[in-house]
Length: 360
Image (tube, rainbow, N blue to C red; front, side):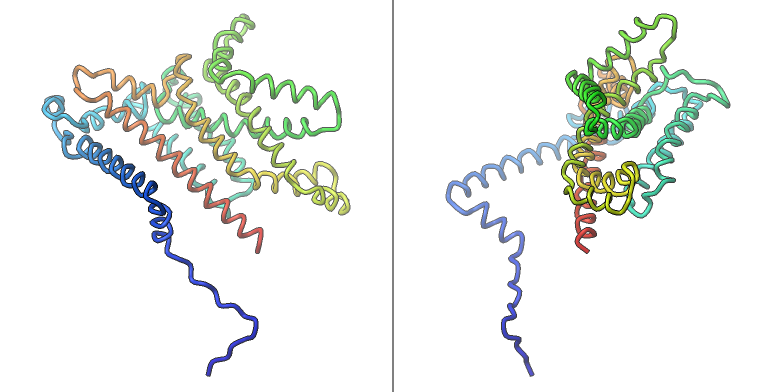
């Protein structure tokens, strides 16, 4: 027995995605021609890449195997993986940067799990970079290692982690100061933000590396400390604007409701405004984090050996390893792409999850 409810509408079946895509791509003769041409270009490009990376590549042997093949030189990657990943760090102490990589990766992975978002995780973002610095330098144990010998992927992630975590500490007060009703405080915040945002990152790094030591001749400024200070201020100026935009996007009723409950300004900001503002600007935060990570190779200009610099150092053996230059930079690009792609996909997943939780 079938019962039909009057007024009820049956859900229309959704067309399959590939049918919708095919209909859009071949909706007219011009679109069909463009689709065929673009598809042909993609197929040719993929075939050429497959020939270089797989079929014409050298997979074993030494430099002589790479000379005999016209494709990628994968034996070079295996032989120089240590230099590419850890830079010029002393070989007998490579366990230090290896442990550092595990610690930093663990904090980043834990930060991607929403149920772990708590005060201990925030403390981990401060404790782990400090522990990594102590570990790499050997400050309290073992043989000390100068910051000039830090390099490779651990240095890249450490520079990014300190810059992004430290920027939050500076950016939140800056964003609140720019929205303050106190004219002097608001003007000072605006001047600082616009002054830092008005110069390229490379200029900020040069100032921290050369100008600041010249202005303070009585003090010896460590290269790593000066670079991190410049990066924190630079990233904080952009991050402050993102947080301010998130705060401005909140309805005025949120502030009025929190005031009606008797919350002070600081408690209202901590419990009501900032959580909602940060959730609203998650895509912008991820984009900024990706941009900062991709900009870390600029530290090589002022003498630091980051991951890309280590790859370039390994690729300088072009005469010994034919074809290693392209292979080395392909590996570097693949590492950066993998990190950024995972971050962007995670951002989309988290945005959908928070949106669904907000409607629940």
